[in-house]
Image 1 (spheres, rainbow, N blue to C red):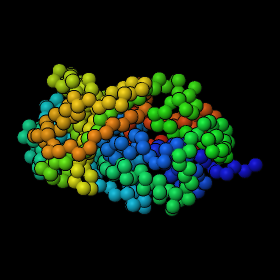
Image 2 (image 1 turned 180 degrees about the vertical axis):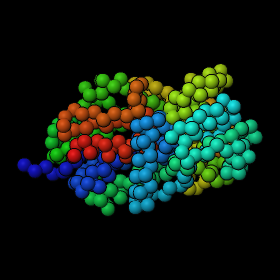
Image 3 (image 1 turned 90 degrees about the vertical axis):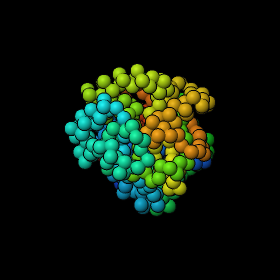
Image 4 (image 1 turned 120 degrees about the vertical axis):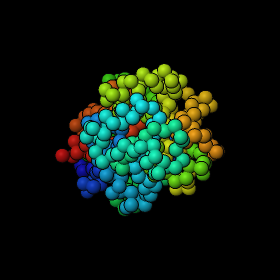
Length: 373
């Protein structure tokens, strides 16, 4: 008996939508099933920062470059605004400058430049006086995630014929079938993209990956004194966290110094990302706390640490905080993502590093190629 769909995707976050996109590009008939009425998880709670520069060397960096290219191609078709492009990593320590110099010597530094403090302020006059240098990368881009994800889904539905079944709970998957509270969906292939839900579907498959969850703090601020950002902004702390920098041998002295000088920041997983929205407001974060079930609370102390790093870069805290929220995502100790294969016709796909927006489209292409080639 023929199946109703070529592919059923469980989960309508950015990773699930990436699989739908990869499939319709092959001319396949796709249905996306999600328990929520709209995207409400990690995909809409992040920076919308499609990060290439600083991703782990090798597979992750290559996936990020491919995903960035897909975003750039799809965004104008889906009516998604690319709000800014590029990344400025502004640093205030000689040890950080050494890391940036080493980074530029790798293939990951191609097209990037090391700016003097004066050159950095030409791009971003709001930088504080204690900045020594900055890395400029043209490779990254920013969308407003809480708008981009719904727009991407709407475009897939209206322009590409993807069927969406919202507010529909999936109770089980097996070869050729997705069982929901509203009946069974027949599909030749199935992708489960559950985000950080490890219990509802295929729970036995998660055991091998030793997963936990990461909670992060996010802020939206108004700070007219900053002006217009030339791109996304990071700082010294990011060099200790992003593996494309931190795994370089030259990063060891910086990580030792950060542990001595900003131990509380590191203990709370704080580093700085600042991106701008179309209305001029800034999205600022973030922190990282790990637990099987993260609590829903957001201590002010953690926000203060984030804002302290903001002040270290810009000379003062933002004028006004207009919004606060938390997000959670899946995290693994030894991998950034995985494609699990419960059956030749089923794939379980989870990004385990908070890089869904940055790498999810490329991972989806790989999984769909496995299923249909």
